[in-house]
Amino acid sequence: MQALIDLIAGFIALLAAAALSQFGVDLHRPSAPEREVHRVVDCPQAPAQSSTIASPSEHC
Image 1 (cartoon, rainbow, N blue to C red):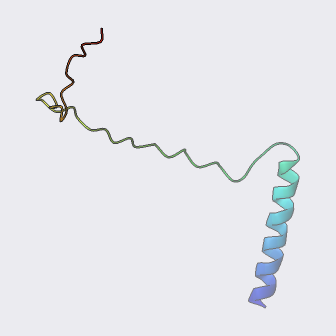
Image 2: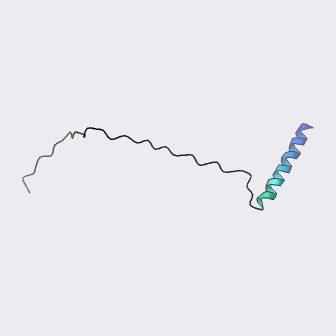
Image 3: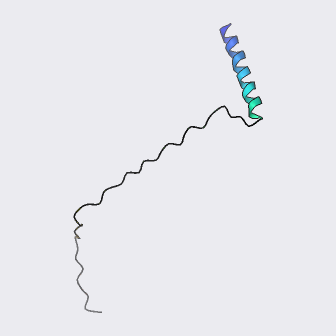
C-alpha cells in the first residue's frame, strides 16, 4: 500500500514538473560554479645561477 502511495506521489510530482516546465520554470536550480584554485610559485629571492656561461664569439 505504501509503495502505491509513493508511486502516485512520484507520478503527480512528474506531472507538476512537466506542467511547470512549459512555462519556463526549472525545479532543479543549477549549482554554483566551483571556484578554480591556481597554485603559483613565488619567485626566489636570489637570482638563479646559470649552469652554462656563453663565451663571446670571434666571428662577429
